Image (cartoon, rainbow, N blue to C red; front, side):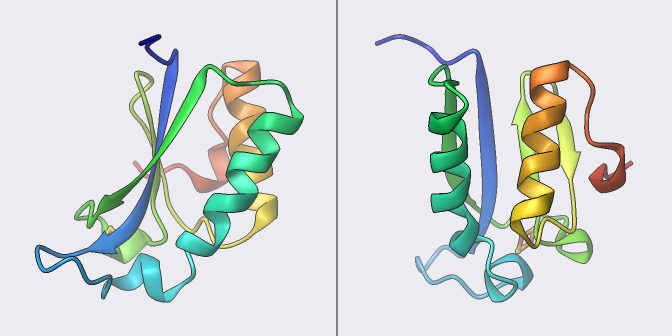
Length: 102
Ligand code: FES
């Protein structure tokens, strides 16, 4: 198995029961997963993995996306423009300031 250089986690609000009930899911975080995957492929960035997660405990900022190993946390990721900005930042090495969570 080749380990990814970066790993993007998208909050899917999953609870222990397996149901998605939190803020991020209600704001369509999972609806953006397919776009994120396609955008990474279009840009030729296969070394970046994507995973959906349980609640990341930052619900006030939802939808939440985090990237490791950078430890960048983004909030308000509600549309394709936000995803584009986050990937642009990953490519340039500078996080998308407009969506950063302090
Ligand atoms: S539901 Fe996404 S951070 Fe809590």
